[in-house]
Length: 272
View 1 (cartoon, rainbow, N blue to C red):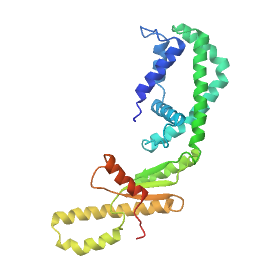
View 2 (cartoon, one colour):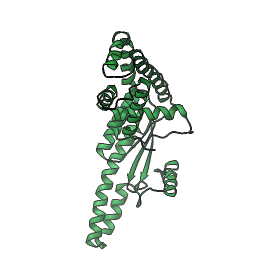
View 3 (tube, helix red, strand yellow):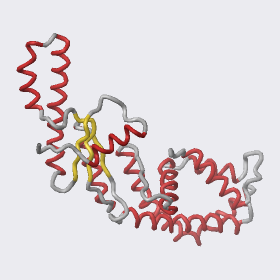
View 4 (cartoon, rainbow, N blue to C red):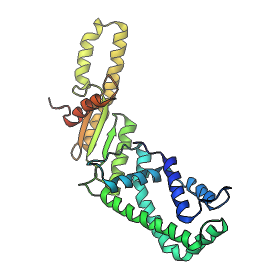
């Protein structure tokens, strides 16, 4: 399932319009239009909608396991920090609701919405409801028996750097993480030194094109081994690090996914 932030945002706006009686705004100048402009201008609205869908899945628990395939590190950290930011924002809003609650009703009346009391009750009720759900999801996130985060990287400098940043931030959020998958590894069962000896002893008998291809492959293998070594130095003692080989085909379809999962469950033994 792919989350469509625009579709979820439209649903949220329609729900608020129905609750406040602002759905009859035909000329686009009333409170419905104002609410649409405000919600579309909220920074991080994609993360908000993603988190909303995440909350639904955690609440329903229709499945034994829910897997979220997150975006790259920066977007993932924004998503994971969203409940903390939202909780603080809701706390301030609820503290100020008595002081500014009347303004919401006045704005609604001004722009042709429902009654002031109805609008205020609907908005504040939704905030209270969302706040309770956020607390529940935060508790689930921080329970290692329920939630764990699997970091996936490739053996290159930037990817290893981003993974280290992600691990540090997950620790700050109190989210369990003890698995790292290093993907697209060239011949993980062999090291660059072993392959280098084979290349040196056979390159004279190769055609020029084959020798150039193997030379580039060896350069890539040496670079990967360097960063794989750094990965084990950083995480080898505390994390379960799995090396996944670079395949000669795309992992698409059920059968290929099953084959790929076997490599995760039964990883290559580097000690052999």
